[in-house]
Image 1: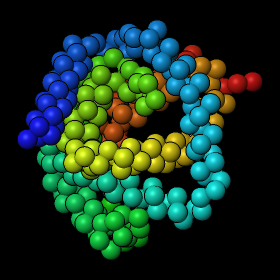
Image 2: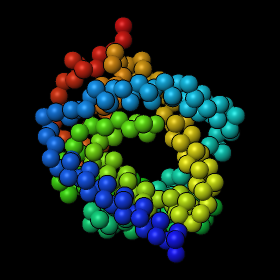
Image 3: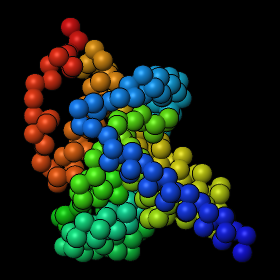
Image 4: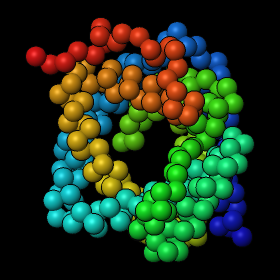
Length: 252
């Protein structure tokens, strides 16, 4: 009974946080996409130091010692777990054909794909989508709100942070392991998920460092444009179709 009350309290707190963040997002203006730049740059510097000192070396070591098929399998496993979040948000956006396809991918990969380690659905060319609650809020017209940099997690926005809280509390199977008391398993899965994600971004992070005099601005603009495009299913909003040469300049 006590554990159920704790779980209910955590979920209530998550939903309350989501509502607050959504309200803040709705009140924000498009004219200033980064009103918290001072704070964000501080967190960005902290993340950069932590990444270069610990996270990136661990990811490089993991890539060096783990065979490519094993890394691919682990990446497939976490992507398959994310399908649950995608299916719910497909439904919330009334994309019923996508929900049917993504649910089918999850069932196929979870069974014939050995818990998702093998992307059998991908081998059959079954279309893959990726949706989250931040995208769902954007789909229904909620403004992204101020840009945010989260400790360790990196680029986000008020809307997307609220969406992440909702998805983590409701459709993330890793959260479920914590709720049933498997705290050690939960922590191990989170760590493995972090390393897997950072390994995926090794090449991209090197390119960012080489491509821009201001990696912070480069990452911010790239993130906001990508998220706006995802909300519109691949279209690039007019506000991002402009010459950004003043903000992003290659190193000489």
